[in-house]
Image 1 (tube, rainbow, N blue to C red):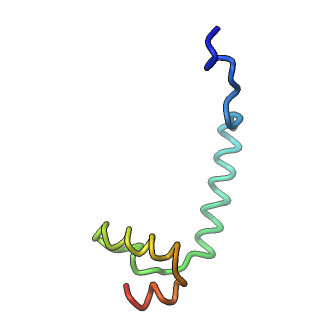
Image 2: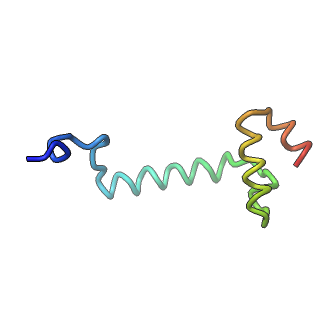
Length: 67
C-alpha cells in the first residue's frame, strides 16, 4: 500500500443534499446583505482585481474613493 493511499482526506465528504442546503442559505444571505460595489459589474477584469486586492489592505471607503 502506498503512503498516499493511507492518508485520510483533509476534508470529509459532504452529502450533496447538505451541500445544496448550505449553498442555498449562503446565496439567500448574500441577496440580503450584498454591498453594491462598482467593480462587481466592471467589464475590466484588471480593475476588478486591483479593487479586490486594495479592499483586502484598505478600508472600503478609501477603495471606493479611488476606484
